[in-house]
Length: 182
Image (cartoon, rainbow, N blue to C red; front, side):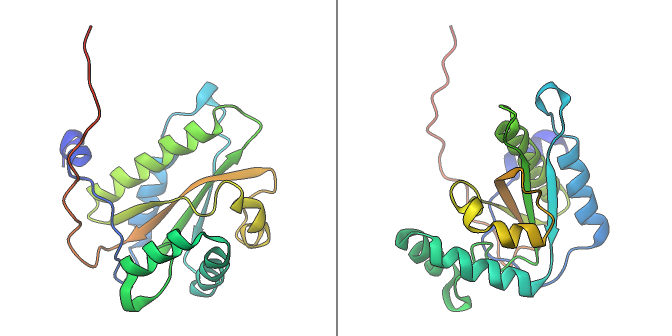
């Protein structure tokens, strides 16, 4: 798949099969993330790859208790009978964090996440950007984040739910951004 085809065909996946992607595919996604740009080449990002179902269940229960009602309701609608899961029951969950003292950390993590989503698409995997562990929730989840090696000095800027799509992704919504040339 060429780069433009990969970008144009990428879709968000919110329904995953329980099958674990190969170690090689997971490592390829992570290498794509590591090769994303980083402001001033600081590379302070940290990638915690979680496949432990027990940890994921505990994380989901905690996130559900701190998430707003609208977020929980939306998630339950999407997950149906499977029940609440902020990572949509993906078998792989990658937490992307960085040292928040650098003003480019959020951008650095965003670039890494986009590379992960594109690499996943190129490999035939589904992915979804998950935000529930960031912001104010980061400190509320600090004990769980520490269990999977997220440094105490780091802030979570996003996560990648990763796995095989259980269904064809929905078509992309029409784009409404404005492009102007001067």
